[in-house]
Each structure stands twice: as C-alpha cells, then as structure tokens.
Length: 168
Image (cartoon, rainbow, N blue to C red; front, side, top):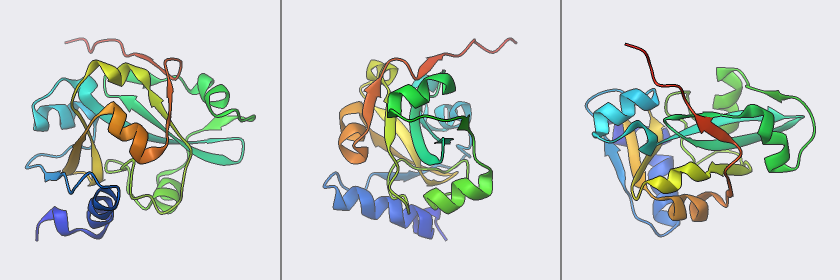
C-alpha cells in the first residue's frame, strides 16, 4: 500500500484540496524524518524544508514553521504569540494527540486541533518549499504565501536563527 493512502496523509491531502490548492502530496522513496533527510530525498537545500514544531506556551499549544537550516528561538515564541508562560516541547504522545501526526510527519495542515501558527520569515528565501504531509515518507510542495494562507500563520523574523553548519 502506498503511504499516500495512510489516514494521516489522506487528511493532509484533503485539507489541501479543501483549501483550493490541490492534492500536492508526494511519496518519497527515502525517509524525511529530519530536515536533512527530507532535503536529500527531495533534492533541495535544507532551508527549503519546513519544520513543523509544536510547543506549549503557558497552557496553549502552538506551532512554529521553521526553515530546515534554522533553529527555533523558543525564547521568542511567547512574544510572537502574545502569550505568557514557559515554553515547553511536549512529548511525542502529546504532539500526536494535538496534531494527529507522529513526529517526523507533522504537517502544517490537516491538524486535528486548530493551533496558532508562526512562520519563520527566512523561508521567503525560497520560491518552493516542502513540508511534511502526515508521514515520514510524504511531503507536499508549497510556498511562503501559500503556507500563510493555509495556516493563517503570522510571519516573524524573530522566531528562528541560522543553525551552525554541521562539522565533518
């Protein structure tokens, strides 16, 4: 069975169709659990991969969409969402309960709960972006403008910073 027929992926595909952008889910032959793996599988720069990160700020779940070559600046999330309280990364089980997706396949659309979203403005560097589509072997092509429309997210230059290059 194709991963495109996985229930989580079907939910993402339907959300894309319902939003009027069409079913753009792509099944990959290699895993895309990390931004580096996804970039290699798709054949793009790591920064063109959208990481969908879930946090709690105080008692509110939120999502940050961050470029694959950047790190989320967790200390800026409260300000970005106008929320008070500690910023915490929830457990994998809680992420799945709130989003409907397992870590490694968390999509910015098709969520089982509506979450406020902030989008890393550094993603504007790329015309084409790729985000997880509900499974570690599935992504969909998008753009910053489309992500903003799909998620209702706010743009921010403050929520991410370049990641130090890997040594090797």
